[in-house]
Image (cartoon, rainbow over all chains, first blue to last red; front, top):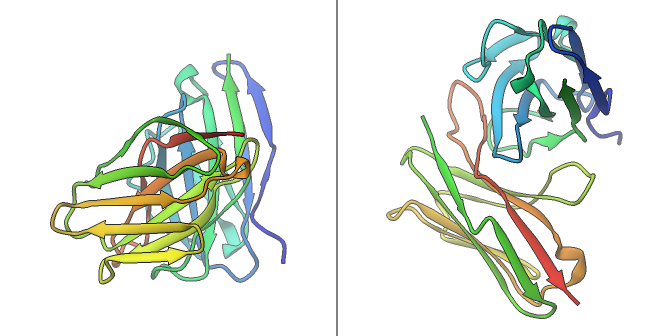
Length: 114
Length: 114
């Protein structure tokens, strides 16, 4: 079974530019989560989709971040315009349902904003 | 919201010795506590988890203990091997209508010296 995949693996952009990260969850997983780890600190929750609906977006830092999951399959996370403090590793995770089931993580996208 | 503290931030042990990582959480409603291992350049992977109705769980050389009263939980690795070298993250979550978002500790970098 293919695991959670993320694209790109690395992205280097300049402040003010736009970047779009993509996550493909495990097939059949309705729950999709975005997290990020900034500057070697803890991994922080950003938001949670159930199918195509945003269930919880309490962790989104500001309105420069836009997440979508059209059709309830893959998800994109767009940062526009990017700021220096957005640098970090963005992880996507998926789970079959939201009750105790293991969240399977993707390899992450390392974003560097210069 | 939930806050998870993890200690130590780095841990160096001799091969064959035991390693212990401790975490505390703030929200008494948290009822699910997974531990993830992230090897260099790889994705975080679940290694063991515990629910609030259980005090201890073991899986071969790995064990987790939970003290709900004190709101802390610990990971114990016995007979450490070089392949145990990685960053370990504890997390806590509350099963509920908003889903199963994970609140992570800051991570512990474990180095097992041969």
